[in-house]
Image (cartoon, rainbow, N blue to C red; front, side, top):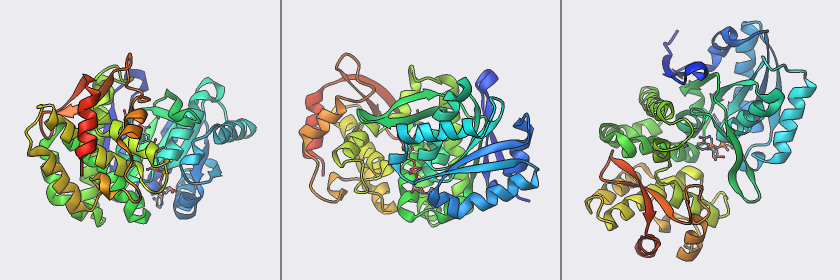
Length: 369
Ligand code: NAD
Ligand code: GLY
């Protein structure tokens, strides 16, 4: 039996383990059993993941004598909606799940965000377990307790902080993930190197291509390193009053690009983040915060990996600068109308910059490739 690496997220009474490695799904029963008051759980997943991985999870729970029933939702960002939140909450109530029972989120960030919110609301707060099945969810959304659905007014605007009781990041489930989704998740892996770990970025520069071909050892190291980095940030700043904002490197530009492309298949979240991180380094260089060569290093890495990094890489018409600036003005980090960006002094040395001059942002967008 392969060994699973355990990373503790230390948050006092809300502390939990993230287990990373091969065959974690098949061991979910034994990992979850010690957390249960009675041998009964609900699983929430999407249709795609259900077809690929629900049977393995069911067998693992059967093996541990845990009764289970599944709620299967449509895949896609539209599922993070009031309609599906209501469906999950009411199904949990109809199934007579109690406050002490656990709900399992089996899927990507969409399922994890929705289920975390539902669990936080039902009976004023049930526990939940994250079993993330995308690279993005394993390295980012499943850890840290941010939960949300989208509102017509914007993405992730209805949510709460609700930490999971356990996260099981099984590297093997990534084998069924489409290549484009794997690459999009990889952008969030690179983010940890760019924010605070130049050595990790250097390692990814060499190992990234191997990792994206599905090399288990490289994926395990990348997920574990990313989770350790995120756990540290969350322990120091759980509710994002300061340092946690660093995890948004590239996201102000990225969200504006996602909004300008209608949150469509034209640009996945991680692809927007990759282009956004390159733009954040362009802005850092333009403001004199980092050496002018650094954005080129970031671009070279993304180009070698096959991730988009230019505005020109977005299929269709180039998003107009005015529209992007308009979307940035809606960003959650806007305070008293002033833009906050995550900038960097170099690779592995990000910082929070408040009160960034909108004209400098405009020039960067106008002149970006
Ligand atoms: P997703 O959940 O939509 O998954 C992407 C696609 O991959 C879906 O079609 C899904 O069915 C499919 N899929 C999932 N696992 C698979 C597997 N193993 N094999 C084959 N197909 C699989 O998207 P995502 O990229 O995982 O997550 C994006 C969401 O995460 C966004 O809503 C974003 O806002 C949120 N997010 C949240 C946080 C947070 O801290 N809570 C952080 C980052 C992103
Ligand atoms: N994904 C950013 C955060 O968890 O804070």
